Length: 189
Image (cartoon, rainbow, N blue to C red):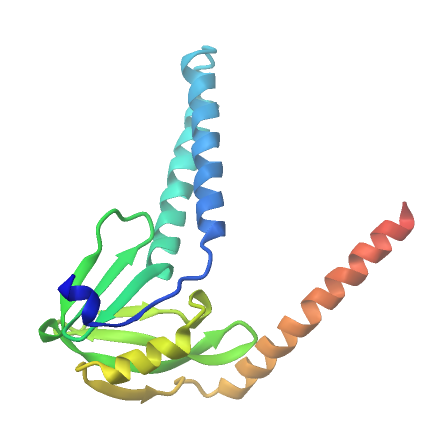
């Protein structure tokens, strides 16, 4: 009960539907292939390679989705982080952190700032802006905490404005071009 009184802010993670859907799909595919091998007697080498491919792709998705989707609770003197597919949260005391910073990166439709925690051992824990619905409250919560603010880090590239231009216009033009493609395809029918 004492911890609830010290909570500054709790992150509101956007839906991780894609991660859960891909996990469910890979489990179903794994079970179907295993069923073909064990129960239907299809012991050809192709089925074993297919099973190995599903295991490797599942592990790659795990490595991609786990660091992207993390539940976060900011307390007055600690932080709790619970990554996707994890049963228990990891608690990090402020004594084990140098601080936090905002660093500029590419986000949907252009450039934006993500939060990055820096540990004493110089490991970074990133909280992507696109994955949280209350991102501004998270930034405000970090400012209210006792954790040191290390400042903003700019995107280090000579082509920063080119990235921004390309990302912005690709986010605008791709849906339009795809919509025209679907209309032309429907018109042929």
